[in-house]
Every structure is written in C-alpha cells, then in structure tokens.
Length: 567
Image (cartoon, rainbow, N blue to C red; front, side, top):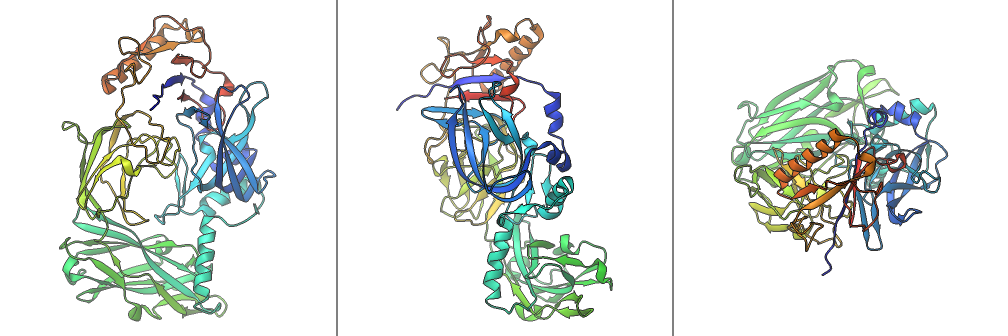
C-alpha cells in the first residue's frame, strides 16, 4: 500500500467586499450575476488549470429554467478542487456537488490565473447557490442564509422581479416531475374532470419514547382549488396510545400552511375510543380561501402521547368516514362542493421507525464531543434500528447539501438497539465535504425511516480522509508521524510563513497562537518555522506547508478565504 503524504496550504485573506456579498438578498444576487438558471448536475469531470498547479471540477448541468442571460440547455459550471492523475486538490469552504443535485445557480465568469488564461463560469460567491430538498419536510430549498418553504413564491418570484421577465423553461424540475408522475398515475384511475384531494402522512418522528409527532400533507390534481373544509378521521392503536385521546389530553393538533389563516377553525373530538375526528371549517370568505395545488403542502401537525412504546403503533385514515367530507369553493358556479375523490395514504406504523435515546464518544468526560476522520467511535443507543446496516448522516461544512454520509465500512456495529460508527471526515460520495458539529440522523436502508438526534454532536476537529473507493473507512492517523505525514525528525508538522507576510509581528503571533490552540485540542504537534519561506504561492509536492497572502485570482467563484491542500 502506497502511503500518501499530505501537503498543507493555508491562505489568509480578509475581504470586506466578499463578506458583504454573502449577505445579498435574492434581488441583489440576481443583479450582480451574469447568469441565473435552475438545473440538475448530471456529470462531473476534474481538470488541471493552464499552469498545472491547481485542479478544478467541471460540473455539467442540465438547465430546466433560464432566469437571466442566454443560458444554453446544458452548461458547465466550474468549482475549485478535484482529482486529477494521482493528485487530490481540496478546498475548505468550497462547494462540491453530487450527481443529481438540483437548485438555482447565480453565476459569473472569473479569471483564475490573473492572466486571462483560465476564465471560468463559477458561482458568484457562496450565496450563489440555492439547493433543492425533496424530502417533504416543509423545506423545498436552502442556501447559506435561509430555508425556502415554497420555491415558486419565495425564490422564483424575487428573481423574476429583479430580471423583469419570465424565465425561459427547457423542462421540468424535480418538484414538477414528481407532480407529473403523480398525475399520470392518478388520472388513469379518475376522469380528468374529477377533483381529487390526497392526504398523506409525512415526517414521523419519535420524541424520547414519550410522544410521536407527524405531519399530514395535502394536494389536489388541479392547481388553485380553494379549500374550504374537511373532516379528518384518524384511527389509532389503543395498545400503543390508550383510548379517548382527546378526553385524556393525549393528542394535540395544530394548523399548518394550508389552513394557518384565521378564517379556518380547528376542532378535535373523540369520535370513538380508538378514533379522533379533526374538523376543519372556514368562514364564508371565498376570496381568502387557500388555493391548494398539485404540490404536497403541510396541512396539520399532530402530536400524540405514547402509552406503550413496545406495542405496534399504527395510525390510519378512515376512508369510509372521510368520503365526501372535504369541500372546496367552485368559482365557476359560485358554490361550495365536495371533492369528487379522496385519496389516502396507507396506514403508518409510527412506532416502527428508529429512535435515538442517547449517544456518546470514547471520551467519558465529554461524551458529546468527538473528532472526525480519526477512527474515534461514536456509540448510538436507541431502538428500531433493525439488523441491516443503513447510514448515519452528519452535518456538512457548507450547511447546504444533504450532509456527510457514512460508508458501510465506517459502521462497526449495527443492531436493533445500538450502533457503533466511525465519524467520517469525507463523504462516501467523494464530495470532499467534512463532518461538522450539529444534529445527526440514523437512516434505515432502502429509503426507510430516519431518526434525528435531540442534541448536538460537537466535532472538535476533522482529519480529512480521501476516499479512493466507496468503502474506504476512516482510519486513525497521526499527521506528524514521519512514516505517514510531513513531520520532521521530532514528529512536528512544520508550517512556514511566506516572505509576503514578513514584517508583521502581530500576524505571526496570531498564527503561532492558532497552532498552539490546535496542538492542545488535537494533540497533533504543529509548529511554525522561525525563518520565512521565499515562496509566495504553493507548489504541488514541494514539501512545504505554506501560509501566505494569495492573489485575487485565487479567491474566485464560491470562495472568499480558504485552506487548500493536495495529496
């Protein structure tokens, strides 16, 4: 096995302009970009720059909407970092896409050489990316600043207002494709003049074994249907939840997006010992009624106490009682009429999914603190994990994409009640992202149920593990150990300041203190050479761990300050 030597490059730059750019709203982002488009990543290819000292990745994007600029149906968006030949070049605080990711991209051309040789179309700062989320969790998209509950209203409309034109549409995005597939399936069962209302269970979550909560989503086969009223009948397993849950104050429900307007009222009652009736009515104000659409939208949020967590906790809609009990206002005839058909999701075993009750690292004094990529084991205690390995997903460094997932070999133990896993610092899809502090989730295999931790896992530091194959696990490493890393004879990993940073004693003191802080936290021996290096930029495999001020051409696209390294 060939040992890989890590060459570390740290670049320090403070730019008020770029920092301010991160706070731009959608209108400002649109105006400052050359191109704004919606699309999906379909292909990735890495390449050398013209000087062969940096690696970039060409992300081929299939465009579905062009909001600004003459954007072709397929466009190549360039990001920093990648893999070429035997060289891995990674960037901290950069963006790395996975095949299939969709979103809206705010882009412009940047000169990455300072000589006009490497002019690439790149994201216009980290705020130049809004990624879609298709998990029906009430969030359809997110960027580094906020989450978007409705991409048409909260994302598309501000962009169109800034461009003062409608987008050119090449095709459907993921949300629209889902709707089109659903309509194709359902229109074969019902006539095109039928008005359908569908109810589904989503986002089932156990809370510490004492209660379970879930959302009810709705949609119609026609856009703009003005929802007026509905009776929702929920049948539940008394073995798990007891009986007469309203009388015994064991169930609560709250209004969500579709019925949050005060014109809608909510009334809960025990229809039977094992069934609750949730009645939604509205005032006679047709103009204020919510226009439901073909997209699934939050309707109700329900929380129910658990009496016996070991029982099978099934909850279902009652199809017979809910027939003809949902109304809408028909603007063509000016009357309230029932939906032609009601479509209901299958019963759901809300206690059948996983639940995290506790977790701990190998540090008994700080059980919620751990390091990533070092082989340190995280033990997760709970129930409902099953006996087949799924995945553990940790928060990632750019806070936008889906997170850092474990590979199968990262998981040491997976049983019904306990999981032991090495926290990875590199995603199993080669994205280059590292795990950071935050909530994590246990996800069952084959798209099964998931459970999220109640508390943060604090990742004190990560040692990057480049995955050459998908099952490469996180191995213990010592960066300063001379057989494995770049340490000197005393096992100290040495950094050099460039001469373009000399003459600033305060800056040198800051770097020294930073290295000391890391030494204390990581027990990795890092040191700063007393002499300055004559190098003013990095070189691959030059055996120098360099800290220097970079030229403007090194801070293009999605990055405004970075640490870069090659392997």
